[in-house]
Length: 161
Image 1 (cartoon, one colour):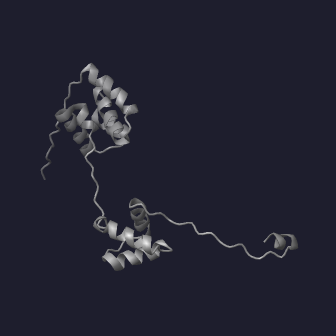
Image 2 (cartoon, rainbow, N blue to C red):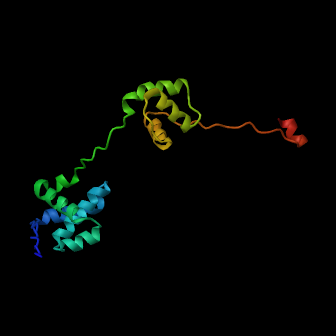
């Protein structure tokens, strides 16, 4: 039985005083929480903390730490501020205008009814929660339905009605 020893690659980065100050500021003041986390990781690295301690404090994996450090090496602080997550477009997007016109002419009473109608028209089945989010995204909203009050047995209230 052979034991192989892994070589650890230590990522060494030199930080300028201006970069440290910017990392310190951005870790609290940047509007996006993911960017704040990246800045925190790099700030802790600039203070000389070991990688294991940075991962423990920030709650990230080895891979995430390596990605953040490599991104800083390649693109600097401005590169850390970029968020490249685009998400997946909905399969219902190409049908949005047709569905909007249909639902304006024939408003559904419930999200389940809207779900069935969308499945009938497009062949795409989604959960009622996803249907509600989609309809809201295309500018439609739930209608509030009121009720007619029942007849009163009190003679004063009967006169008011």
